[in-house]
Image 1 (cartoon, rainbow, N blue to C red):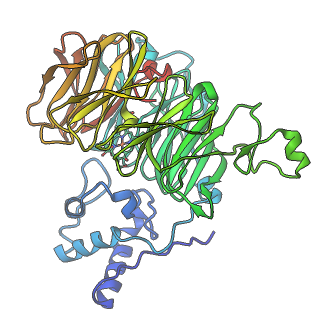
Image 2 (image 1 turned 90 degrees about the horizontal axis):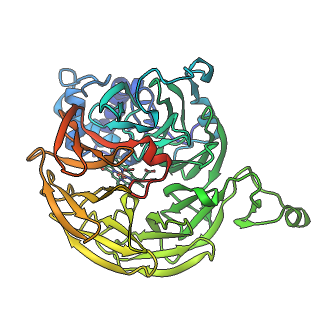
Image 3 (image 1 turned 30 degrees about the vertical axis):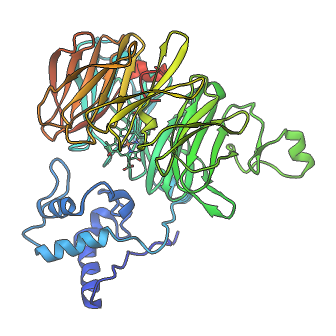
Length: 513
Ligand code: DHE
């Protein structure tokens, strides 16, 4: 199919230089990154996908190459001016939204390992439900770690720039990853073997797995779509355009709501939350509303596919959200970062405001019980505090000052402590430990002074935890959850997120979902 996208023409001062840089791109980059910059064996080179890499760093990558990848160094071939021009090119928008529809998605599908070729028993002596996956951002690898003995079992290359939590099949056997470039990968936890891959978008936000393990839903930023996949082989089921009121929207995030048997979606450009039911007996969704089959037939309309979206209007855009323990309400953070709201998914309207400034990072919030009440704790990306919110009254019961703005929080049902980093500020090496009984910080640790330290994940029983020393020559540190003493370091390349199978498949209130 003809792509809408042509090579992004850079508006440079002289047409000659523009022609030169486009030719240079074709000669130097296109073979690996695609003539259209949508990626091939190398990642997509679009501003949306590169947003987190500073242009100066990108110039360094072009000049010096990237370790442990196939990206070579070009400093002997290209002048500093040519490198600058190339980087400027790939940071400039392409003229039209790329088309990445059903045809392109299907063509990208790779089936690598057959389920029949997998062992029936784990080939290792450890609890398969106490395994961890660790995403190593430094050289784009994933490690599978045996959580009983705290030692790596497998390490394999991932797609470029995985982002967001790894998601497991309900039995914990398979793990699914999403890359910022839209690749969804399925890996067997027992062997570390890649099962299947598919490119569901050009720039993807995240992926969710249905609680019954049958479906995946991918939320895209580019193009404006949700993509439903069959979890068994990652084959395409449906492309759902994200549109309403005459405009299209990027997806903020999609999560599964297990008791509702539906996916819940927040949108960046439409003031709506979408609920996509996936149970076989769910009422069909027609034009954003649930219909009985009879009514649909009476009106002569039928659902547009297996999955339809119920549209819930909200008074603001939601950039990030968090469920209450019953999955009846969602707490949302609005774009301006000044306030938040609670939306009831059954009443289909906002039911409360949240006093939440400083860009709360709700996606990494945790829940814990204090007496009869459920409290939610969230760090803020722009303020040095953790907010504690009562999940019945929706009041902010406490703001705990921290050493800086933070990114991630973690807890565990068997531990009274909640862990928060302060990595968005100057004290990026500190981890602060909050006693959830008193809501006070009881300890600050700096296991690697001066080094970026963040993101905790507990083991299955909450007795140990893994903490990332997120530097190129970094490590995952194993700590005792009671004494906070370090027991071991597993060397890794800029490890970021870590995900324990048991905690994730049981939707532990202390971990991300
Ligand atoms: Fe994330 C999860 C959004 C930047 C590492 N991040 C998520 C999720 C969302 C999100 C919506 C939940 C997805 C899921 O698990 O299904 N992240 C955003 C942003 O909007 C933001 C601020 C800007 C952006 O570039 O998109 C952002 N995130 C980052 C980073 O800079 C981090 C530190 C490094 C990276 O990999 O890019 C980062 N995000 C993570 C991690 C998770 C995550 C490790 C999973 C956390 C978990 O414990 O589940």
